[in-house]
Image 1 (spheres, rainbow, N blue to C red):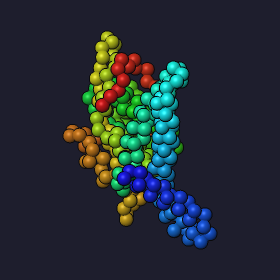
Image 2 (cartoon, helix red, strand yellow; image 1 turned 180 degrees about the vertical axis):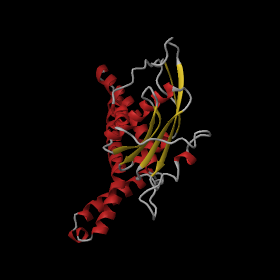
Image 3 (cartoon, rainbow, N blue to C red; image 1 turned 90 degrees about the horizontal axis):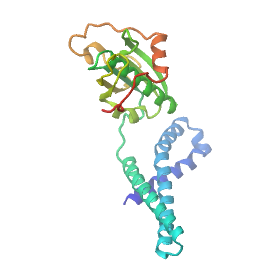
Image 4 (cartoon, rainbow, N blue to C red; image 1 turned 120 degrees about the vertical axis):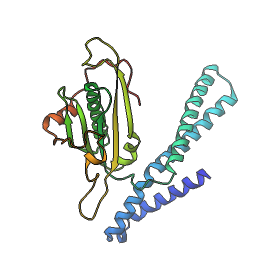
Length: 262
C-alpha cells in the first residue's frame, strides 16, 4: 500500500514536469504557477522514494552474497553493508511515512520567532542570545532571509527578549517544533566561583498571517499576548546594529559542561 501511494505521487510528479514544458501551460501564468507549487510539494517525496528503492536493491545484492558464503572477508564486508543498509531502510521508511501525512496548511508560511529569557538572570539572557544566533545560522544554511524585528538587551549584552522574522519556503514546517522551554546547564561567564548554573529560555514560533488591513500580524500587542505578569507595561526597543552583532558574533565564551537540552 505504501509503495502504491508513492508510485502514484511519482507518476503525478513526472506528469507535472512534462506539463510545465508545454507551451500551452507556459501561456497561462496562473496555471503554470499552480503546477509549479504542486510539483515542488512532490519533489522531496520522489527523491526519498528513489533513494529507498536503490537501498532495497543494494540490500538484496548484499544478502545474496551472504547466502552464497565463500570468502570470509567478502562475507564480513557484505554483513557490514547489510547492517548499514537495513538501518538506512528503516530511516527512509519513517521519513516516507511522515511525508505522506496530511500537510499542515501553514507549512510554507514565513514565521516570527520570539526568544525570551526565563529563569537564570543574566545567564538566561546570554543563553537567549546563543539561541538567536543558532536560529540565524540555521536560517542562513536554509537560504532563508532573517530580520531582527524587536529586541531588548541586558547590561552584559544578552537578550531579555528578541523577535526574529524568518522569510523562506518551509520556515514554519521546520521551526514549529522549536516552541517551548529550552534549558541549559553550564558554568556561565557571570559565575565567579565556577558553579554550574541552570538557565531557561522560552521560544514562541508563530506563522505569519495575512489580513485585509495589513500585510501580516503577530498579535495586537506583544505586551498583552506574550509578556508575563508585571512586565506588560515595559516598552521594548527597536534593534540597533549592536543587537544584530550579538546574533552574528561567534560562539559564547561560557564553558559548557553539558550541552543545552530542553
